[in-house]
Image (cartoon, rainbow, N blue to C red; front, top):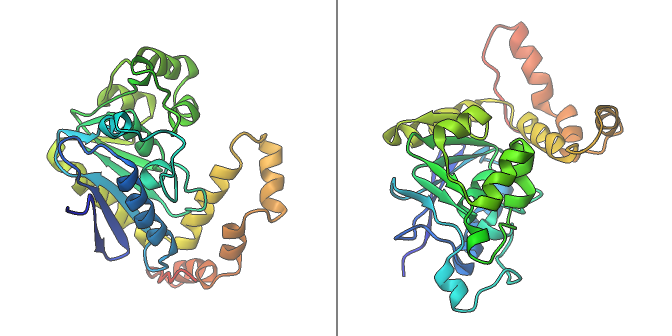
Length: 261
């Protein structure tokens, strides 16, 4: 059986492609494999950005494999490091991830998309959560993340009714960052990833760590959390070579040479 998850390194960027026909649905074995890939990305200091894409242009991912569910797989199973899809609960991943969404993102497909930091969607992409009609709950990120990304009433409408949201509307709400023709999705994701990879990697990690950890804090408490040294990635960045390299390159009128240390 072929590997349902393929990877490709392009400089400091890792491209992760879900390839499980016909609908890129995710069973436990696929989820475990995705977790292995994303943990490898997390632990490789030479990699700075990941792109999560899928094979084909019709279905990004149909989410949880319902055939596997009918065969006995269930929510409380071990879905591997990082939870469902290898990324929805990978709390110590502080490197940026870009979701390249071509086609339909359904249920768990939306949830792995929501676990990314930036989203490129095709013009024909649609997003929806059918779990309420299937006797289930979108508990791998739908109920946790969607109300934080959209106005609560809009999120609740999607979660409770299963309404489909098209890419254009998702962009208007800020749920996705870019909407492009189908054939340009991966190219746009690569363009964004290459730009991020040129930034200081420790700064990227510190930004992601801080934004994630201060969610729910008051502005004052968020300031205090940063000033009290609660964030390891931020503290590491402050004493790094890259922290000195940025201002030095600016004063010398040259491009900085960031090394991630």
